[in-house]
Length: 143
Image 1 (cartoon, helix red, strand yellow):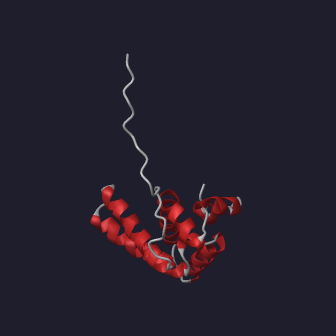
Image 2 (cartoon, rainbow, N blue to C red):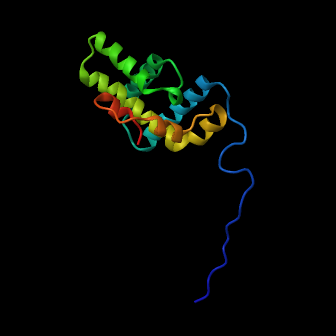
Image 3 (cartoon, rainbow, N blue to C red):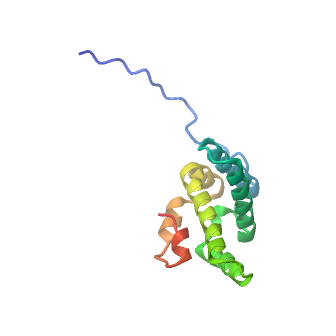
């Protein structure tokens, strides 16, 4: 049986933009949030769920006070601790951790190369820095 000739070709420029879209981390994070939300829509999430989760994610990122790729486990502990001091229920604190965990995984899966090129963040370094943790910290750690 004859083998068909390959019809693939390499296109110059690579898969990652040569220049970052922006060098401002806050603008880039906003674009990442927009892409994250677009992925929810593409997966069929309801508009009510999207609206609720956008607000939660925005509150979480604001409380963390730094770009998501620079967040440390200590930052999460601080935010969760502040929520506890404010009298927020365990389930609410868990929602903050979960929404950030989902966003951080999205960054690792879809935006890691761009973030590393523009800001020097590496998924590998984040995983290497992670230590075994218990409680809510374990929910955050990216595997």
